Image 1 (cartoon, rainbow, N blue to C red):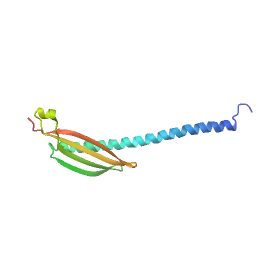
Image 2: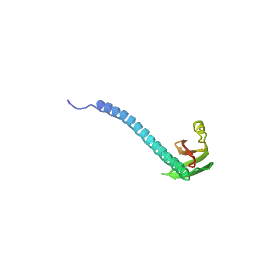
Image 3: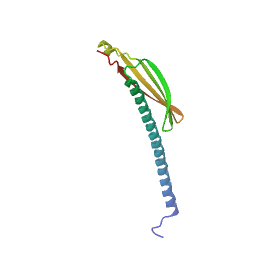
Image 4: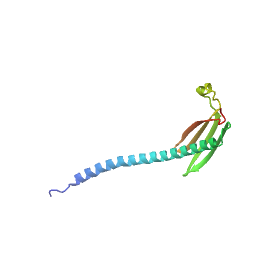
Length: 129
């Protein structure tokens, strides 16, 4: 019968389609995992910015360490803030020596491991002359 496909041709076409679909499924799984990682990193960055802003809003902070756990979007984030004296030789030479470094470390479980995001900034005493 001219123009009809044989059984072997159909099997070969299905095999080619199956192989290409397996590759597409793997790419989809990778993109879903990357999307989840990006979402968790964004949430961690927002949390770190929130902690830094809270410390900065209180004025010139005292040296301290604080930590805690917060749940956002069914993910437990562990955070730790540290306020310490900062030493910047260029600024000290200019007479600016009252600087505090505010560091925030945010951690969360992802897959089999733990991921971390660290953020820090310098705060100056507003009473500098």
